[in-house]
Length: 344
Image 1: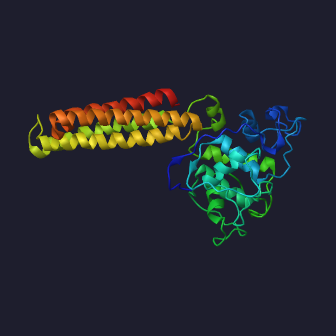
Image 2 (image 1 turned 120 degrees about the vertical axis):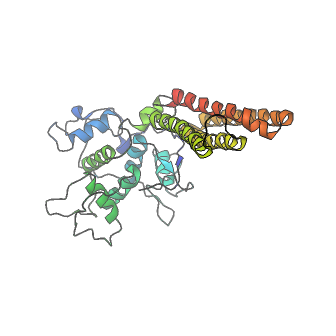
């Protein structure tokens, strides 16, 4: 599901395990999840990375049903999410609830919503149809290829799109009877398998979000930002060459074209600067975000002061020609510094 807004969530600490578990264990230590178990690989990966955990007696309890609070906990620990709505408070989800942060994050991300009566129902069991919708939204999966006709999920069914998105991305296979059974409740092993496959089919790296948080740094992917920085350079060069071809000669450009080039690069770099900054600070803790925003403000205020002083002494045209390229380079260096400090 395409997210309309691109606001990264504020990193809310979530060190709580789902289903009341408290002991770290991987699938190899679960007495009820042998290596030949159908969902062994999924449970092994998710438990190794502490996205899910077992019980104190080394039991995973694969046949226990999953609840809404468990869904919130696992997804919030696994991947970065994007806020698309204002926070909403629920009568049955207090700040002292062990999964409070998880449920609030998924609510703000538009992935797991509450009910119209003001309740979230954290202990309510989830159905296969509901899980399909949740995973499709969280992992941003789209249907592809040939759709499968599930006779119990017609096009008029509200979960049709989500079911097809999961099926065409190899997240699940039809049951032996060829149906999806959207109203069946989902067990821990079924959910682990579906979540693991949805994760693998998505664009998100398989390093869980909570492990990145534990490093004490924000999270931004280096390669796309570095690629866009290079692309901006190529775009500016190409635009300059187009001016040369249009003018019929090479060398110095008319001032009006030089100004257009400078402003063109400034706009591209400023846009990337702002987007990268958001990716960084909206993944930080509240305290770290506050400090980062102060740095952003100080950076801009310093540039504005330098700009106004230059304009006062030499005029606006001279500032654009001689100072603006310097300010644009400052923004480029800031982006590169963020990648070094917060990138992966």
